[in-house]
Image 1 (cartoon, protein in one colour):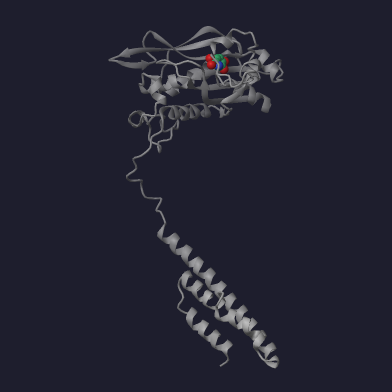
Image 2 (tube, protein in one colour; image 1 turned 180 degrees about the vertical axis):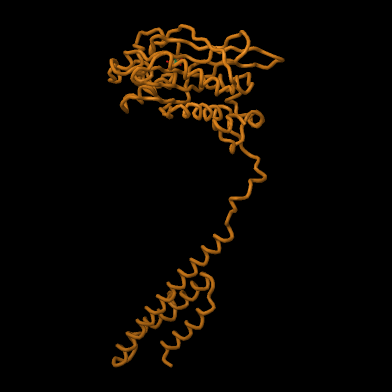
Length: 355
Ligand code: DAH
């Protein structure tokens, strides 16, 4: 048998037992490596007598092609085998209940944001977002709060440059502007998110959370606003009846404006929402000021609507009996373990919000 045929036979007998890639690679190196058997034969072609050279070279070439294609074929077969066995071994039975699941809790603020989104989505609101770093125009001017307006002083703004063009948004209201610029009416959105003011004590933190609401359509009036907030507060506190009052107030971006208080009482050291004769302020609201609508090119003869802004942290404190706002942001693992929520219990209206 010629040298070439011996190599072929030798190869065919070796690959019969191959069952892993490493062995296959070894065979490949043995033949095609720098000093491999086939490589050496190619190197020596020059020394072969002229009349045999052509046949030898052509036989050697076909040996090379045959063996390489065989090696590639086996290599991909082995790869598939490997993947299949991995899939088999690493298969997870997703029908099994989760056991030993302990680490990680959902922060009460995130929980409350999920609850709020769930409640408003039931009555047709969708969720919008805006950036924490806002421009002065969206945060104030477009919201009918011109340069010299006293409301600007109430906000203790963190400005980000000397020109006072960039700032950390002082409320979620600029998302109203972003939404109305981006699309055409009607609008029915909420926008939860972080807000910032230079303020810090037991009930104020420099970073806090609000949720903005905006409903613009034809023929929307204050009764819709009342109905919407009444529904929201009942759902949120999971009570059948709620005591609620609208107090006249002032915001530059609404006319008329109101602040909403809910009735509560303290029984055995616990706060009971919806009963009693004490009042607690929880949100600001009103009918969107025509100037705001004009700023975003909405025809005020056709469209109008209401807006509201709710302090999320305050709601979370009330609902879950947390009395110091600063604890929210201290990242104390023990606190989070106590007040946090199970990540698998996503709030939904039909199953209960705060299970
Ligand atoms: N942006 C106000 C604040 O931070 C809250 C607010 C009041 C939002 C009335 C509104 C509104 O959309 O209509 O104090």
